[in-house]
Image 1 (spheres, rainbow, N blue to C red):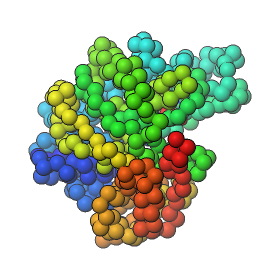
Image 2: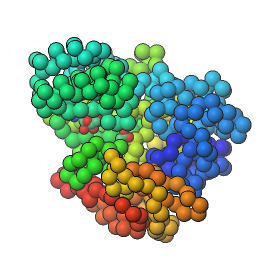
Image 3: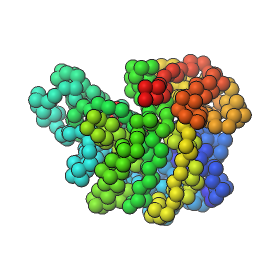
Image 4: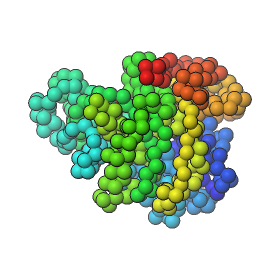
Length: 423
Ligand code: AMP
Ligand code: GLY
């Protein structure tokens, strides 16, 4: 089989690595990929939003299966474009990717189908939103409706802060057209857990749980980032929580999408908060998480190509989805200054060390070739991942492995997975 993977981050490197384990696969392409993907795949210089070029490439090269890693092309309808050309593709169509593409849509869906989430109101108009705030309780959460690189959420402690937030989202368009609508919702407290799942339209099978660290600095200080590290499983995701979510969140979401005529095939990523009143949905994503994928896929025993195909064919109920009974931790090595200003183009040394150790992985997030040399090419550069018999061991292993690689301005958090010490 020939497989095409669309995207260029650590998530796509992890997907390419996992796809390469499948005996069915002879050839992998990544569009556009990165220097890490190049170990398993031929990287082709086509951007994730260049649908016509992607479709033409898949036809010319007789690609049997295309896997979309990123949110923008999914929300923009890349799956529809592939299907219209008669190509097999893994991911939700545009009318289902709206689950991630519009927070107002997903909140209305949860309300209509009684799926537990924070109470909220949607607004198309800044004046109405500002008036609503006058009687609201604080802190309160403001969310731009559309995609905003994970940055469209503001937690506001005072009325003034919230009013400024509404103005910057809806009037100043801080997040562009994503802020044409917005959601204002109740502030919740509790542990956050990410649960990724495979969905075939009817059946849903969840993967092992994970937790992300979104802030740039130790102790959850600093700015929000795409994610500075992850661990899996979450010790807070107990059997009891799992049972509740299966009954009230996971299957009800799949059934709700079907009932709305928006059959969902692909990945649903549930961002959950374990509140004192039980688990609540914080957000849905319509794709694998980054860097959640980097700790979840190394623990997955099943052939991922079989699972992708079962989702497309609607036969997921016949697939056994299995994970190892161990743990994994991913520490992101970033360019100092991320997520604001940072330099790139520095040579990376020590990558070969990962070939010598089983259970250690170096997933590339922002790298490229400069001649023969691999150099830094982004804010998040590498996702150093290690497995262990439990979270403590995995964490010690991952941090030891962060010392194997070096590049100028290397920056990392030192407390990824620290919460597990308190469990
Ligand atoms: P989201 O993109 O919706 O996951 O939001 C980004 C982050 O904002 C989440 O990971 C939470 O840490 C925080 N957040 C979002 N919604 C709420 C809420 N209703 N209450 C408290 N924190 C929230
Ligand atoms: N790590 C969070 C996300 O992928 O949205």
